[in-house]
Image 1 (cartoon, rainbow, N blue to C red):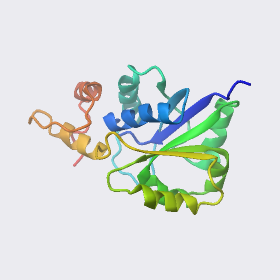
Image 2: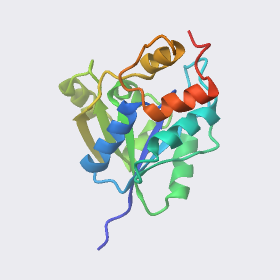
Image 3: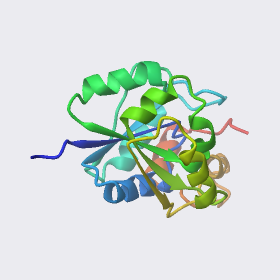
Image 4: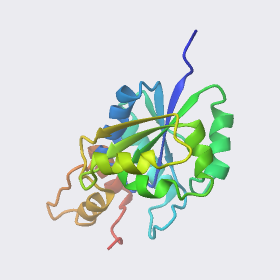
Length: 202
């Protein structure tokens, strides 16, 4: 019997996408035996201000993912990821696939408090990339307390646990000063220079 197509969904702001995002996705492909992963940029992320225009964030994503045929960008009409709206759209788009959601470990403590989180947990698998400030045993304790339990959880240490979009944005803001940021992708730097992005972000 053929195994269901396994689709990874990686939602986030990606402002901008950096090497840590891409490395995490490539790790997840192998660790969770995924067929492909879709980066799902949020149009208007919650709790974030002065986010770069959605079209530019998508443009940088497409440039960054071009060398990786199993990674792609998925654009939905939802302004931000929500279980009640986004999950049904994903199930409609991938009706016969097993959906596997990718999260950084910083999301784990708050995930169970999301509206309708139980719908996501009971029907999905999760992949967790551990950030530098988080401990595996603490994350395990949080996950074991979830009700219901996810179908499966794969957890691993990130190759680039300390890389952040904030550091990359700051380096781009200081363009011309020789400042370089760990995790800044050449394709993102070229795109940002071409469109002169992030210059007004403090």
